[in-house]
Length: 255
Image (cartoon, rainbow, N blue to C red; front, side):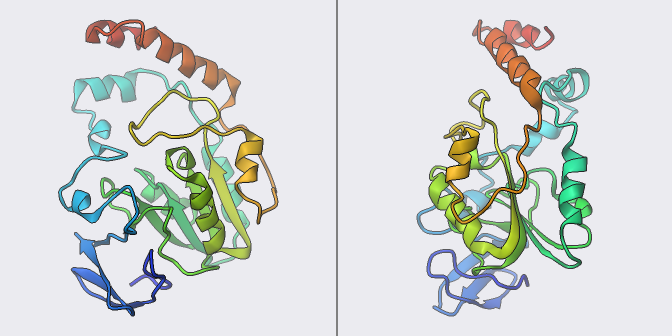
């Protein structure tokens, strides 16, 4: 059982955990599905029934299946237009800032669970998401984080904030669960095509992003993928959308 969990709405402490539910001190219960606690607040965009029914929401793990010809072409043959060449270096530097056995919370883990567990190997890492596609440790909505105040030495949310319907509430929650003198690592696009519909809501300038974290001071800021990536992705998206015919759209992927 993961320590420090609270009910996402009432903030009541966890009392008991079983294979099928988590029970809290206010006598409320939230489900456990296939070994993963599903801890959604009542006002979340997401719900436990969608997890149980395996409804696709923000990600569909079938995109990684290279037995599918379309996926094979996209993942194996086409170059990445927005590759983050410094990803490993950046996260290793972040990991070096943390003492042994630090507590790390990842939001929007996606298919990188093993990557995060490895890069922060000297820490206690909790990988979370809003779906069960890649078997995170916990399923919850970042607008209602089910942990008590000052729980984590590092909270990391990469390419997540643009998918939050209320980024002000989301960022308040991130600050709430981060320890004093802890770290928040936030990464988000300023310019990028509409994606992961319908869960794509915002884009942020640096100052817009900064305004969301009044309790923090900035240690470092950087552009991770560069201006060339912005131009390449925008141009590719423009060409693909010149036609509604599927084979023509597919052909433009190779230009």
